Length: 477
Image 1: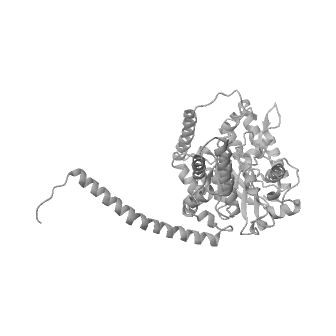
Image 2: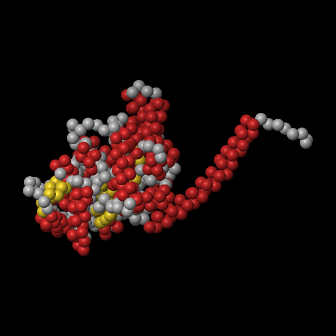
Image 3: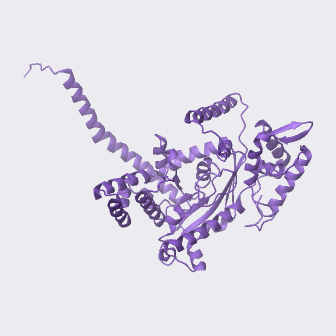
């Protein structure tokens, strides 16, 4: 009984690893999960008393349950059968492909990550880069939205900063679920994006099975009342103007909508504008068919150089923010009221009729967004500079026209970000920012647009709505 037993080193290592794994799997993981779940539930209870649109049970359902529910949806199962037949595949292979699509699309929303980490990060980044301003065209009606309705914020797409900016400003309303392109499917960004409730979309995919899985997920989320954000243009504006709407996501949301039976869907138009869009030159360059393609290394090098220069300015206490970023929330549009007024039911329309109805709705929402786009200083100045003038501009002439345009837009009921007490300072700052970027050149006391940057001036000028149009709301400054 007292004899020593010699064990080989490899066996000792295995025994230690197995013991460590058992302690981790049976003790540490369950206790950690319990602690995290307790904290998450506390956050959810706190948020549901504060948010205008509460977090839905659908968002709190386990991701694997949602994936199974999506894959075994009746319409997805029908699509699997057709896909297997059309591609001469075993049904099991087609179903495994549908499962892969579902795993790619379905998010894993975490309220703690969204409101404790995501909101903090969005607020810090937005305020670090811009002077953020937000407004509501009809705040009273926004507060009267049916708390059980599925609210969809419909947003013009100016920059990739749009995701951060709207999430930050809408955090008092609800947690937003976005459709995010494939560009974000890199580790660890995709894990964070999924935890924030976003779902990934292959925008150029024509695979009928993929489109059906995506359609059913969007419809499920909408029918369960999940608050979502949609960019109807389907991509960033290249020339500063609003693009023609893409109807896919809107159609997925509404193709089963019956005003007499289903949960109401409420669209809230949201307009965004910036003094500086970080991707402006890159976006404008895509309009030139003769421009040679740039390598990924060039893009990475340029981005790192931009970050490095700005970090250097911060360290030397010489860094300035990129001007204003403004968001205006418009008047909510209830689909229940809209359908009754138009005497239609999307669920009962044939496909061609439904596409026409969805396109009419999308055009109406884009017109509302166009009337809401905030007038921020640099686009105001670029609208003035966009007028042909071979003799250049004196500072006094620029200032007079700048103020006149701002006053006209304000009289039309637009959101104009030009504080009365600091008008001259704001104008001078906008002028200085264009000079720093070498967009404006000063010669003998007159200002001229750099010919190489004429497209940049037009890009920002196009972002503003035309003055003297019918206002969509009362005056707001």
